[in-house]
Image 1 (tube, rainbow, N blue to C red):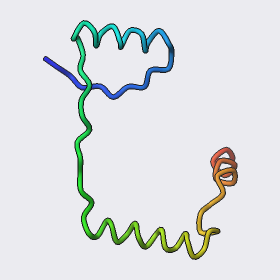
Image 2 (cartoon, helix red, strand yellow; image 1 turned 90 degrees about the vertical axis):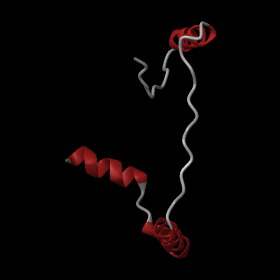
Image 3 (cartoon, helix red, strand yellow; image 1 turned 60 degrees about the horizontal axis):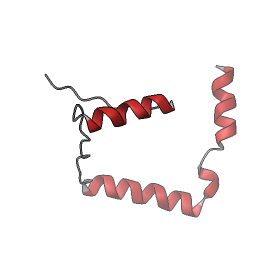
Length: 72
């Protein structure tokens, strides 16, 4: 029974193994399914982008966010 896995190869030998499995036709690459955003989703994204464009400080500094989570 075929199963789908979403993986990230972190070592060269893992990449080599995946390439060997492809050559042996043991695995196949799946196409990502295309999807459409609804008009509401597009409007929400546009609103957030406008907020960021008008006020760049609206975005939080990544270093400050990391520090806050380290304290928790």
